[in-house]
Length: 400
Image 1: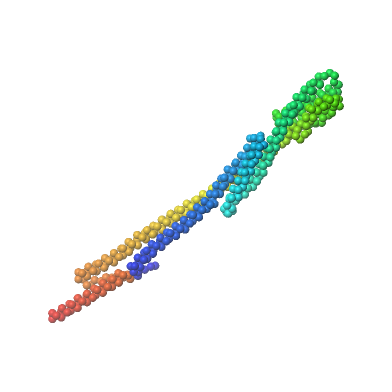
Image 2: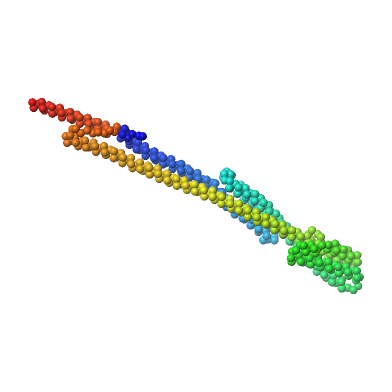
């Protein structure tokens, strides 16, 4: 421990200012370290946490928009508009991929929760985009099929009117052979079954009833057509204008029967894909939301850490500043008190000396300037006492 009684006045002043300087240096050092830590935390928030949180929110919005572009294909019956929605879907997917690629890899690797959710997002997105692409293709096929159905329905309607007209026309003639009339009756019955099957499907959409109504009708009607041709070539040519289109609607891949089956198959596939798509988007949004929440937690943690560092800075600066202030106050007070006390003793000795008391002595145990002055003062008192003693001795001798 530093012995103040062995220090000079100048040394004590220097020590006091040195202690004050050390306190100030500590204050500066603590402030620098704390501010550097806060700056590092702020940089982490601004350069890492906040960008992740923002990108995560943007990804969530774009995922919803991408899903809406898929849903929008069912609100139009135009292939061009479906293609426009496909372009938007692809554009959103590209933007999402860019956002995912721009996420800081180091931060993701250092956070297991973020890494896990990101892995889930990438996995589910592949499934979602595959299902959505299939939906778009099926929707385009459905629109094309519907256009063909509309076209073939108009043809069938025309065929229906012509068949009914000519069957009524020829079945009422008396000069026809009984065999030909039987053929016409059978043809009427079988054509009516086919036409009713088509009409019923337009009402109830029951493919089982449609298949049942079409079962074997192509063979029977084709046989009726051959019978008509064998009876009368001209009538065969006439009925070919009706029966060949009707057979086409039954047998041809672009005929109404197969178009209806294709439409029904597309509806089944669409329902299945929509179910998978709904599940994928629900899981995808759940993972994206969890990713957003986790990124916000990182931001909140970084902000909390920054606030805690600010608290440490405030507390440390208060303690160090208070200590420095106390030193700045107490050191001068202590030194002033010490000097004042010493000067008071010095004054008392001088006052006694002026009153003729040569027995006083100035006792100062410190090793400083006042100790040196006390030595001079005590030496002066000793000299004066010696002079007065010599004068008294001389006076006594003169009186003898």
